[in-house]
Image 1 (cartoon, rainbow, N blue to C red):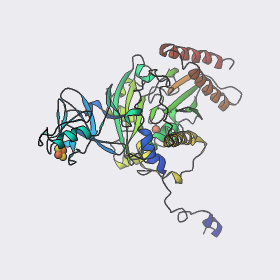
Image 2: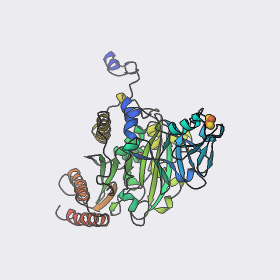
Image 3: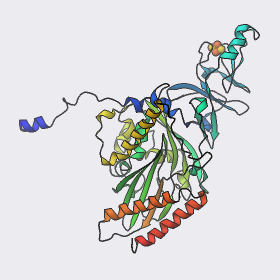
Length: 452
Ligand code: FES
Ligand SMILES: [Fe+2]
């Protein structure tokens, strides 16, 4: 029998049986919530272009029930689901050249929400004239870009430029749009990108090799906070090589990493780019969706993963539609983040130094939310109007055999040097930037093999 003291010092089930609280600020994104208001200052992808046609499709974004459609003339519309007459669902509406017509009493709305026709009413009557002047169907601007439909759900006097990222312009890159739905709060899915150590466990040690053997190595972890950009690095020693892998988050929800399958630490790679360019968008407080492009080519992942299964494996380490038994045997990101419950209870977490990235970016978002509440608008990713946003998610693998001195320190220094090279050339033109970063990393590799 265990001693009384031992039993009292352990078995804390009863003492810890109260359910911890959720983080109300980060978790709630419905209209009029502080975080919902903050997220409504940015363009977000809301659907795949291929999902939208002349049959209206019901979607939910940031807790709003919406309908998305394409008119026979090819114009996209994103409007509130409830008709402003007597709230019939426009998911049962009919699309026409000019917009969408409600099934119940035939009111016709343009894609920008104007009431064009109220056919059951005398169009010249005072009430019909007044209605058209004063009432609109709630509508949002959308942009169809490279297979994803982006929308802006915020106040129209604050609408930002649609941001261009360097990832849109990588030479010979093939980008394929995909979506993966998650049945949990958006922060749980977003956290994983600022948690570079999970790749060694979830995608290597705990579930078997989901990407490559190199992922199972434990690396040196480092974080960078650069305005609204957050970087989480996991730098691994793989025999005589050092593999610097950089995960990236640009607030509020843009994410990139390195390659899923093209980098394993055994072959040289110089500023290889992300396997995905991705946004984590709240559907409501209990669901979110990753809408993204998977990137293939020399600087992305191998083209044989350019299919539904490939997208799911790139996104979450495993395919999504599996039996419970398979999920328990080989859990992927979906199991890790959905398993926390539909809204994780942050007050029950115990954050450690490897969670620093998670702490930093959550704090960053909260600061911007607070600023916005005080009237300070949040920053946009484009510092200069029209400029391309430089991103930093990447893999670099150089030959750098172990020294006599502290190898952990050596590996850390290599990470720091690679990141400094990236930062130094950030303002170069896009072509020069990549060329310069790659040649400087190669120069560094020479030095790493002689006199670092
Ligand atoms: S409810 Fe839509 S037209 Fe009447
Ligand atoms: Fe992951």
